Image 1 (cartoon, rainbow over the protein chains, first blue to last red):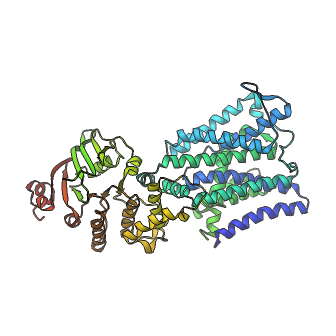
Image 2: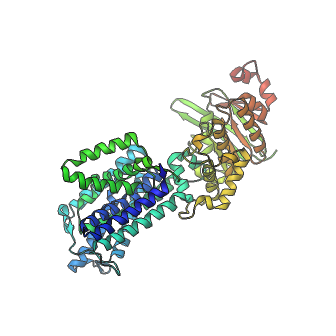
Image 3: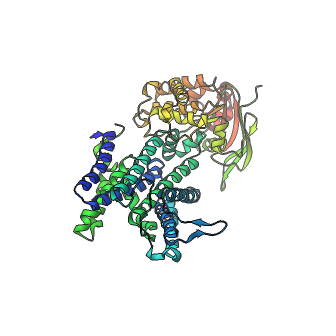
Length: 324
Length: 249
């Protein structure tokens, strides 16, 4: 067992080292693969705030991933077609600027998480799982029927959006943007877990009735966690759409929600680097096992079973000592 | 007579045909321990839930420091100064003793909405939490996980959490539950000292502790208070002997 802090630093170092190596040996596909893992990790770190700290098993986080994706897709679509997004009450144009897109993605995800959280957090346990799933399906079917933005076929963006001072079409530079955002969110998550809010939220997960008798509201604590979680996952969605230059209803699908949960469980619930390891392992398995068989999910399922049965703390729990 | 800190007037609660509490009036005055005793199923837990706000009453009124809190939530009553302990310890088992104690300090200070600074670095919260731990004798195990504590230490921590709220009144639900002789003695001494901080409404089955601690005792039977008085009055009451204590009391 190694101290968790070392593992955290080691994983982040590996995430930097692999793309640099790929750059040296001229393997841009590997850089894209790692970027995909980093973006999935960002989405999972977002979920881990709700699931790990708050104990909220959301099967609807694809809503925020999809909202982030469509925020990017819609804004970029209007920018590339030179059509206004809205004309009333005042003209709103699309944009190809990543920071603006991120702002819109995070704002819309935050609002969606607030509304969904206000309704779904009145339930708990399996009912919470089902109501978040139901919201996910609502958004999924809405996006399928949204013909203006591609409906079931989705929406293609011809050129990746821009970031001031960087060439985002260069895989290593786009990776750097995604990695920097992941590090920022991981740092925020680490601070959050130790903060007064994190302390209260952690207790609200374990003994909500006690928290209430301490003059605190478990509902409000969980709602704020859910909103932060949704905002981070929304940001990941915007990056994922930019990576693929494509957005489609599958980003809203329950399978997507399930995959984000798998990243967290595989890596380690409530462990800082757990979602990053889970997402990286998933992308690796998807790539290597996917090359061997179309039915690679069978192997993934077996691995997940093994983790749930024999390693409750996920991969991090197997190799790292907490609070090292 | 000093004005009551916590009082209930005519509390009623029914579950279908069963009347759990019926026209219960009770008060706790400054500096006293008022014990509520009674057989299992007498309505003690329901009464606590009504007083704390976790169960709405069918009728009646609850006042804290003269203010009507009948329709206030558990959280609001806690913010107003009503602290309680649970019969079955309700503690964050994965966290340390200090983190648990800081939770109460956090609630009392009303500032859980800080996201970036470490909770343990907030000296004001930490001082309040450590003072409570020292008061109950847990200062030496503050870094231990609650899951590693003995049952007796968990009961002490329950009291520490209530203390961190700087309460106006305590409601203690069987604090001696599951304790052996030594643990019970330790907690009895602790509660006896606590009455100077805030009066205590004590629900307890340990009659030795009750008779040692209580300034007044109310006896609840079938949802009704059949007698209220000093320890001697209750010991001598034929109605109480008949309904609960028996002839050996």
